[in-house]
Figure 1 (cartoon, helix red, strand yellow):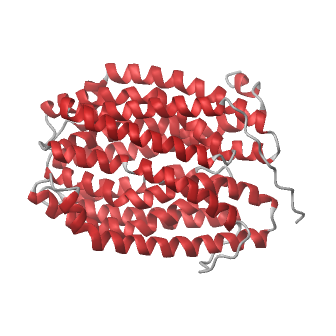
Figure 2 (cartoon, one colour):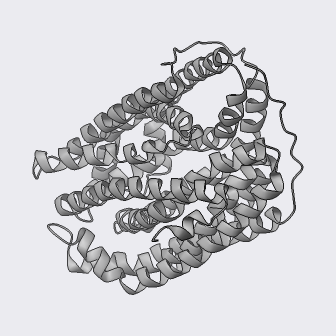
Figure 3 (cartoon, rainbow, N blue to C red):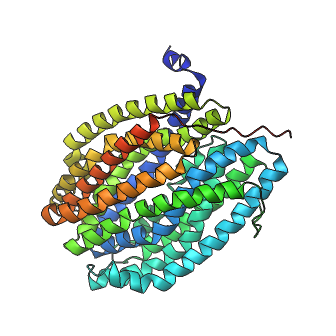
Length: 450
């Protein structure tokens, strides 16, 4: 009787709900590893130059590869879903070529990160202390090669999600678990080296594991082919090019926050990082579970030629997620000091640090209902191939964030950076919702006989 309400839903709603439960379960396990990692880092380092260096390096070095993965995930999953109508040999050739392209791009990005890092520190990291800059220069030895692994991980995760398999969500926690082990095993006084080796090994294990799992669902390993001849490339390249414009604009949000926080001094990067990662735990378990589950389902509904139904499904889920986000934001704001203290307050992380992070966290919680609501609408527009509109909204969001940072940070400090993020997501939700209200015209690809 407990799940009769689920059985009463339409089959497409059931697919999203069941997948969301699976993703939420995997995310809960994964975020638990992330939470324990945060506890270990807070215990060992507190709010210090080490955490400043780690937060700055992680955000800035991951900027380009994470941006690319964000673009390719959004545009690639619908293409892979539609590719189910193609023959096995056509799909295998396409994935082989994707592997080759990702490896070439990844190696190029890794080399660029390593070579340009002194200039990155000189410009964006000039507000960091001398010791934090030195530690950042050491950490880049892990984050530069991680660029290749991040791109390959994104590709294998997209292959799994196209088949509505979401085990990749659990494996997202592997780098966090690896850092946890290294930080605890190394003991105090080891500087950034536990963070460096934990990061690098974690990315390696995650990428290898996803490659194996993707092979099982696709039925083939995939061998890199360094050419671009598959028939899916023109449409994919066009969509990725449009999406990349908007994604690049949005990708500047993280570096802008790091630059703004570094200019504030007084370990503002560390404070912002602790608050942001706390929010990411709630975002991951809540909104990300539904968002990740929805895209392959909406793409499949659209592939069947029922774009109107896909739109109705997304709008209903979006409004429901806004309500859930409001409830979670209210509860989290009330319990913020307790939650921050439980997660971080031990060792070098003091009660005063708890008060400081909690006050910043509360401003960031204002983004939750808008983030929860917009994520499902992003998947809808992606399934409808409305990438131009998505890029336009992303540019508007970035402009709002940049202006709010410039205005609020000098007046409110780190709290202003968090409030600026909340304003950005409010604008994003309003924009996506208004666009989603207008039906899209979708051309369905004829099914190919196998």
